[in-house]
Amino acid sequence: MLKLFYAVGSCALASHIALEEAGAEYQAVRLDFAAADQRKPEYLKVNPKGRVPALITDSGILTETPAILAYVAQVFPKAGLAPLTDPFAFARVQAFNSYLCSTAHVNHAHFTRGSRWADEAASLEDMKRKVPKNVGDSFALMESEMVEGPWVMGNAYTICDPYLFTVAGWLPRDSVDIARFPKIHDHHTRMAERPAVKKVLAAWS
Image (tube, rainbow, N blue to C red; front, side, top):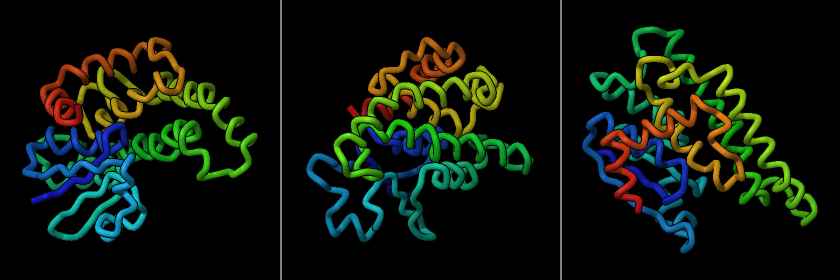
């Protein structure tokens, strides 16, 4: 059985939703970051990075959201979570998820995780001040150039959608109004109505 490690409020929400959408048999294990569960020896054996998500599979352990999402889509092809038979279309899915991981998430992380990049108090405060602009800019780009609507890739629901839903859920913390982005706002509203999303959110509450 697959085993997903997650923490409430983290990007692991995307992987959790994808597993539920795929109809996978899995166990979800909650870590408490406030108690530093991610730094305990037993978890570091699972993921030496000390982060979530981590997914234990029969073949080994996977980390990083884009990799886990791609794995779920490929292991459960009948769920139709990615255009697996079209290399270019699948690469576009990967490109969108990579942007969320490498840019949008990092822009958000500068608010609460600035110590990863700087030590000086002035530097940390400067990063925090830039978060609304940087996050807003990344979402403006996604709104205008990447999100096709009604789902990220158009008419087909894919592994991009739970990931966008997850990162867009952080916008209030970043002092960015999601209403600035009509397609993403509509996407977020419709995602929240999906049965799999409701089930996972209930488990996270």
